[in-house]
Length: 210
Image (cartoon, rainbow, N blue to C red; front, top):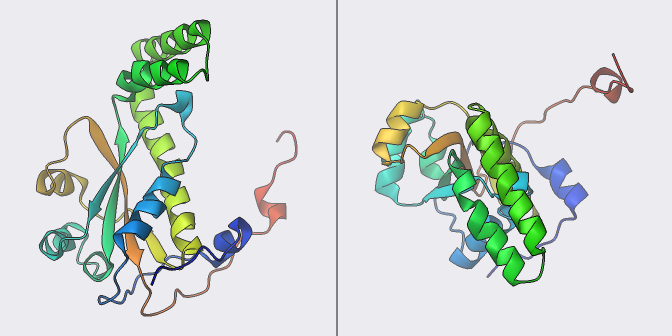
């Protein structure tokens, strides 16, 4: 039986917490997993280049390979899926495809198409740091959206920065075009996340200028 979308965006944001203990017997139907990924992929991105890729690991043997790479955090094995969020260092190569499709669908004019492609090419050519910055920034949007989509559908997640990036790249044969942004576990909690506190807006918000 599929889990129905039952939370509003506000409810999903408030209900989402980082879960580290998962029910290893819980299965996410492929249709629901695809829908979570589809929603994640609707995130915004610079020039609509969609800098993210989702490396979805559900194979138990491969998850076991990830265990030492993730410093023996059992969640990478027990969660239904461990997802590596990748940022595309060569996202500029997608500009022509993206804007040719938009032109064919009547979403943009020829002039807009040409202008946007020229912007992308100029930005990536003239700023050596932009490829990495944009890969990390934009794939992070998709990662957050994935976590909220999962929660809205009744599943739990945990963003993980604790892993050996070089060993991960080697173990999963990740091409040099992609940079691992973070690791996400996705599944059903066996133990609920512990409560957390948040700083008040009086400590977080700066009005107009420092």
